[in-house]
Each structure stands twice: as C-alpha cells, then as structure tokens.
Image (cartoon, rainbow, N blue to C red):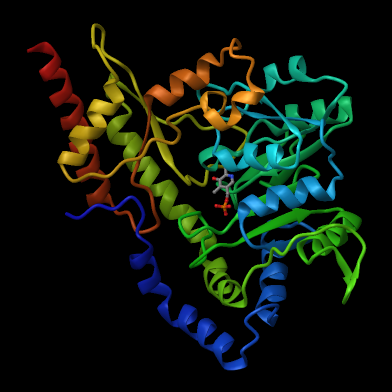
Amino acid sequence: MKIQMVDLKGQYEKIKEEVNAGIQEVISNTQFIKGPQIKSFEDALAKELQVNHVIACANGTDALQIAMMALDLKPGDEIILPVFTYVATAEVIALLGLTPVMVDVDPNTFCINTDLIESKISPKTKAIVPVHLFGQCANMDEIMAIAQKHNLFVIEDTAQAIGAVYTFKNGEKKGAGCMGTIGTTSFFPSKNLGCYGDGGALMTNDENLAKKIRMICNHGQSIQYVHDVIGVNSRLDSMQAAILNAKLPHLKSYETARNQAANWYDEILGNHPLVSIPERNSQSTHVFHQYTLKLKTPQGFEGNFRDEVRKKLAEKGIPSMVYYPIELHKQKAFSPFWDGKENFPVSEELCASVLSLPMHTEMNLEMSQFICGLVIEAIHDVQSIMNR
Ligand SMILES: *Cc1c(COP(=O)(O)O)cnc(C)c1O
C-alpha cells in the first residue's frame, strides 16, 4: 500500500469536474486578477464561517502581516504568541519591527498556555496572537477575557483550523478566526481548505477594519490611484478563487473524513504504553489539520526515541513529519528576541517527542490500520535494538 502524508490527487479526482469548469471559466473571461470568483468566494466563506467580512489575500503569512498593519501596530509594540508554532506567526511580527513575546504552550492541546499570558503583559503589549494549532482552538474564553482586561487586540492565526468551532463557557458558539479582532487563514494546498497555489484571507466582524484591510491589500488604495495608507500587493488570483469555490462546499465532509481517520488512529494507538494520542480541547471541535501524537521515551533509552522511530517508519514506507522540531526561541533568526535564559519546558519536550502521521481527506480504514500496525512495529524495532 502506497501511503502519502497528504493525497491531493485523490481528492482532486472526486471534484475534477467542478474544479476544471471553474478554471476554464477564468481562462474564458481572462479576468485573472480581481475576477468575479474572488467576491463570490469571499461571500461564500463569510457565510460558511458566519462572520461579517472575509477579505482574500495572497497567502496566510500576508494575512497576518496585513492584520497587524490594519491595527496600526507600531515598532516597539509587544505581541504575545506561542513559542511552539509555525515560523510565519513570529516572522511578520519581527518584519514590522514589533517585538514577539513568546509564551509556552499546553502540553496536551499544544496551544498557548493561557495561564502564562498575563505574566508576559507589559505597558507595551498591544496584541495576543493565538494559533489554533493542528486544527483545534486555543482557550478563547481565557484569551478574550485577558484581552478585554488589558485592552489588547486578538489576531487568531487560523491557518490550520478553518471550520473549527469553539463553544464559549456561556454556551455561545463561534468559528475559529471569527472570535478575536481579526482572524487570518491560509489556503496553502495542504491546508484543510487548500487551493492549487498560494492563497489566504482575513476575517473580521468590524466593518471599518474590513475596509482598511481591503485597502491595505490593494496598495493602500481607496479609489484608483488614490493612496490613503501604505499598503501591499496581496491578492488571491481568480484561478485560485475558482478552485476554492469548487472546494468550499466539501469543507464539512473533509472535516468528517479527517475526524474519522483520527478516530481510527486513536482506537489502535490509544492503548500503546509509549504513545499519547492527541487530546481534544473539550470546548473546541477538532478539524485535524494534523494528527500529532507524542512518543514517550522508554527508560534508559539514549538519543531521541522519536527520531529513531520515525527513521524505522520511513524504512517501512510510512511518511511522517515533525511539526515542529525547533521552538522559535531556539531559531537563530529569533535569537534577538530571547534572553538566552528563559526556558519553555513544554515546547522543548514537544519538539523532541511529537510525530505527525499521514492525515488527509482520502484516508480509509485499511490505510489507518496499515499505518498503525507499522507504527507499533517501528516502536518495537527501536526498543529491541535498545535492549540488545
Ligand atoms: C501555513 C501557516 C501559516 C502561513 O500560511 P502561508 O499561506 O503558507 O503563508 C501561518 N501560520 C500557521 C500556523 C500556518 O500553519
């Protein structure tokens, strides 16, 4: 059985007609930039997420940068973010001359540890950027309460969690990316709602912010050749919007397929003494952008157990990934933002022990059983070498 980390070809085969028709239409009317597909996609996504405004842009990293520009964040402002995340979150903060302030994460849900946020707030703090990592929401009750108390913006990095729903303690339900001041997402091909190139979007319920975001995405232009603010050139191509229009109606069924695969993994791997299956945040649905488990190192093992298991798995033909092998503070590029002393013990532990298994919309029971069988075998192989 040939196993892939993601199967975009298999997914395409099932929606070929809609996708091809959409692409053909763009070619026929040649409005490759700012075609009608953009607005129809923005409107459809806004409806799907139940948010007032969706503004498409070129990618998820731009979306984060544009959000920070729209909120007038200025050099020296401090922005709180989890230390265990994809680099894009921190990159745009540094690029705008803002100061990333890193916070350790929860060992079970992998999202920012909200108990640690307040101790990092200073008079310079302007925003919190929670990352809804691997497909489930951070603790938004706590984050929104802290933000309100300290008058901070909340920019939700929803690149991995589009479609996830958070239930607040008062019973109110809101979509990932639609709870804070601005939400951002990515349509990178392997994301849960992926196009066939780069793409991204911002979500907000604030009409004035939406206008400003739209302006910034388009060179800060209010009317043609009139530039009110410094902007960027960041747009979603019509072709990508057409592909997203074809895929959006399937988002819910994709989420179901991912959850099904996760449940199969859980059932087989959940009893293994050296495996911790991903814990669900009881207040959020999980859209399983990644199925990420933690491997426990057996007593007396020298070296990195996870790395050895991953090597064995690869030999057996099973791809896997380490999201993420290095915490932000240990990255050379971010050394100016780390005092060299502060520890982030949970993130350090995660970087050494997490392993993401194949996860996509085309997974079936046989595949998950096959993968789990070989994961268990790989763990066993590494242990027997150790005991030799
Ligand atoms: C993918 C991703 C991004 C960036 O999205 P791009 O479209 O690749 O620029 C940002 N944040 C997180 C958490 C991501 O996973």
